[in-house]
Length: 148
Image (cartoon, rainbow, N blue to C red; front, side, top):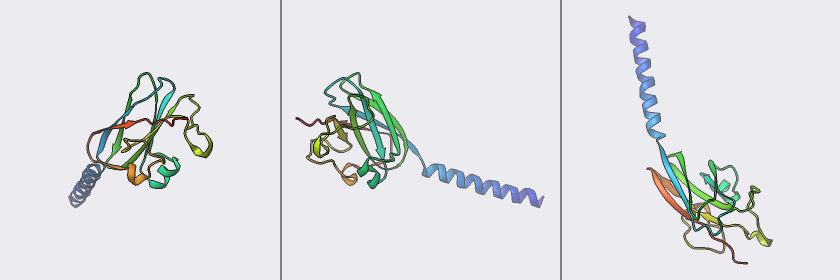
């Protein structure tokens, strides 16, 4: 009888911990609408970041998506846990898997970032692009092109 009560208590503690953990790691849908795509060709490559250094160097994203461009707007929905995120997007016109650039690193393909709604002379940093995901959310990321 003592073993049974002990096992009941252990099971109850495990259940409480499980409920607590799953409540903390609530997942949400983040719909990303990539807009203002000038040319209907190639793919839109979306990268989701949670770390400022990774965002700066565009390495080790938390999640990614590659969407074929068939219209001037494309969308993708990510399933993410609540937290701080920043997103970078580029239009891979020639599907070579990399952002093509000219001298000084100026992109020859369209780029976009979360929270960037007008073109800047430099890419935004993580702080400028980040947002806190705490519910199902839809964001818009316009693509910007460098005029030659």
